Image (cartoon, rainbow, N blue to C red; front, side, top):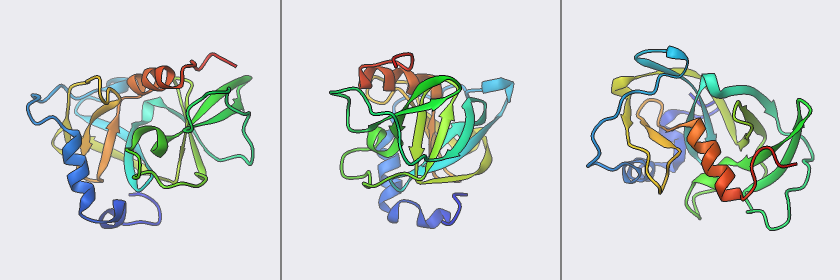
Length: 186
């Protein structure tokens, strides 16, 4: 559960369910449950919130949860608005993406600073509004989908807690391509 908010309060009401349903291709057959770290039938995930939407990130991909610093290294010129800058961490400058602005449709992402950062093993750091407790998602709690060009990072949609299940490898590749600069660029 997201700290400070009930499941019923996420996303501002009933429109969230419709939005999540629209993300899934009903014609796609169920795909195998991703099993990062060999977790078998359950996916251990950290649920974060950005722009009023929950995102389930596999625990094995999360390196750290940090409070957002006051300043970041400026992004390169011409970078998309969702690329907030770079965070000096572990001797490298890691790109920081506003999770809501990068992944949600325009108008869904609320403006303003995001107080939490989630560092992923792939090199990206995600800025979000809230960080919840870890959850174990079972096969029946997630509607899985095939990766597609439109949202390759979306692995499925969890019902409890309501969240978009993120494939962190595809997310990193999508962010690299959309930003026009990889995580290795300084």
